[in-house]
Length: 576
Image (cartoon, rainbow, N blue to C red; front, side, top):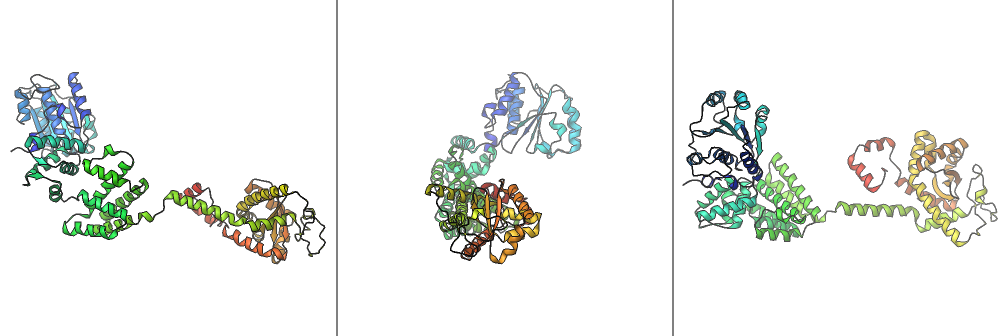
C-alpha cells in the first residue's frame, strides 16, 4: 500500500492547506500569462513545497493549460503525478550537489522538451549544492531558454547564495496550524475507515509541529499499532508524551501547594514511564502559555481538544496574569539550566518546589504600596504630636539664658551673634486661629527644610569640610517667621555654634541652602536649654538615620539601572 502522505498529496491549488498566499499568487501569474523562469519555495518540512512545485508543473504543462485547474486526467498530468514525466525532472540537491551534475544540467537545458510545453527542473534541498555548483548555474538562471523553468525547494534559504536568490521569485511556506492538520486527518481517517479519538488527533498534530506530512505518517504508524481504535493513551505511549491529565494534575497541585504530590508524580513519570524531564518541562511551559492566552481572552488561539479547552479555562481562573508570567519565567529558566548542566530531574523538582511557593510572593504593585506606606510612616516620625507641640512652644516662647523668672525680652529681637540661649517669650496674645495656622505653616516649612538638610550638610562639606562637620552637630529645631530657621546646639558643641555664627560662615551656608532648597532662608544658630537637650539628642538620632551617603558612594550608584528605576518610581534619593 502507498503511504498516506503520497496517497493524499494535493492535486491542485485549492487542496493546498494554509498556504493561500502562495496559491493565489501562482494562480494569478498563470491567468496573466506572466511566468517567472525560476521559483524558490522555502519553509519548514512537510508544508507543501514539493507538492506545490508539482501542481505548478501540471498547471504549465496540462493539455488544457496553462491553467489554474490542472485536469489530472491528461497524459501530462498523470505522468507528473506518477513521477515519470521526461520533461519534469525532480533532482535531490543533497545527492547531486557537485559541480559535475550542475554542468550536466546546464548542458541538458539546451535540448527541447520531449512532448510537454515546458521542461521543468524541480531541485529539492537546493541549499545542499556546493558553491561551485551554484556558480555553474548562475548564467543559466539569469538567461535560461524560454522552454525551461526552475523550481527550487529548501528548508534553509539562508544557505542559498544571494546571487541565486536574486534570480528567483521567492515564496515562503508557513507551518500548518494544528486545527487544519486535525481537519485533514479527520478526512483521511474517514476515507481509510480508521476509528480515532479527536483528542488523539490533536496530540498527533502537536507532535507534527506544523508538518502535515509528519502528521499523516504518524497516523499511518498509529493505524499499524494494532488497536481497533486510536486513543490518546496509545499516542502517548508510542511517542513518550506526557498526558494532558497529568499536566492538569501537576498544575492543580501547584494551586493547592502540594509539593509532595508533584514530586511523586515526577517520580512516576521519570522512573516508571521513562519520560524525559525536558519533555515534562516543555509540556508545562506549553500549558502555562495556554493559561496565559485564556487569561487574556484569546481562547480561539488555543490548539486543544474542546474538553481540554474547557478544563483550561476553568483552571486559568485560579491564577492572575502576573502569576502565570512568573511561572513561565521560572520554567523557561529551568529549560536553560537543564540544557546547560544536565541533571534534568533535579532542576525540574527544584522548579516545582519554587512554583509551589509562588502564592507567598508579593507582587511589585503591592510591594510599592507597602514601601510608600512605610515612607509615609517614617516621615511622620519626625513630626509626632508631642514634638510638634514642644517645638511650637519653642517657636513662640524664648527662654532666658540665666533662667530668670522675669523674661521680658522677645526671642525675635535677639541679634544673631548675641543669641546664646532660647528665652521664654512673655507675649502670647495671638488669637487661636492665627496660632493654629502658624503652627501648620511652620510644620510644612520645617518638613521641607528637614528633607533637604542632609544634602545641605553634604554640600557644605564639599565647599568647606570643617564648616560642614560643625553644621552636622546642630539640629533643626524651630522656625521663626516665614524664612528664619533656628539651628540648636548642645552646650558641649558651643564652639561649633560660635564658629558657624560668624558672618562669613553664615553667608556661605545660606547661599548653599538657597541652591539646594531653592528658597532664600536665614539661618540662626542658638544654644539649647538643659530641659530641651533630650529632644535635640533624639532629633539628631533621627536625622542620622536619613544621613546621605558620601558623594563618592552616591556617584557609584548612578549607573545602576535597578536603583535608578527605584528612585524614579518612589520619587526618592539615595540616603545610604
